[in-house]
Image (cartoon, rainbow, N blue to C red; front, side, top):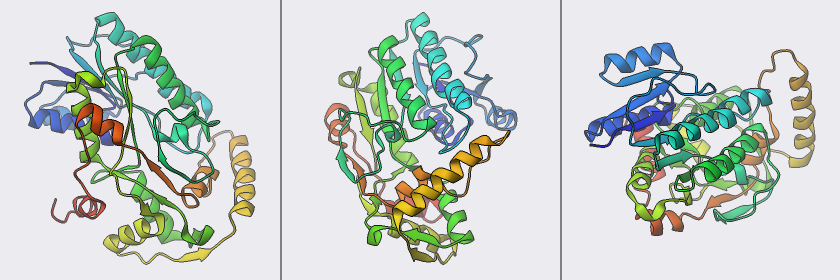
Length: 319
């Protein structure tokens, strides 16, 4: 039976994938950096390797396939940290797979590579990439280029807005903001987006590993529902017992203020993510969705978890 290497196995998506592989009886080896999480996974019977992928891989057992989930995902931070995780780390994974002759590789990228401060509905994988909105977008785009150059048969997936039980980023970030302060309502609430439950992302990864026609492709992944950002926030807050406060706001003055705030934050010796970033404002301002027809056609995959069902699973109802 094939053995799968999962990078970022101590993270949200990597951990979910590792669990699904175990449930299906597929042997897997996880790579991660969090020592407490590694110990917990080992206690559950998972084979784990403690390793920082910004360093070349060594002491890895025989592997038949690789799923590269590890990344530094954040809207703000030092460029060097993003390069180490998302460029150097990806290069090291590509070098490892190439040296071992492993052709079944799934690289997890992000639709953030195509983000622009504009409405973008039904965005296709072959759309020209705009200038990167932040260091995360720039380094994820660079990672895609590395994968295409060194592993031409690899599948690149771009899952949008992954959420679910165990997520520490997307919905928790929204809930913290809603609890702390009024949220901006830009452009009369025009912003909408398609999110993806982690179970759908895992199923897309498994489909990519098994679909011969997917080799060498870049594929969008999402839940397929384009939902108003205000509705997403209101529904998540209702599950968490929070009453969000919305305040009509003008976009561009806040964008200019965010640019200044980010610039000041970058000057600190230890930069902290500011309360407001241009990328964060953009998510509350514009309509965005992915065309996922290629994933349906090439992999025979389609999302199974509606947003309502995803909230049930995230907040423990009907999980």
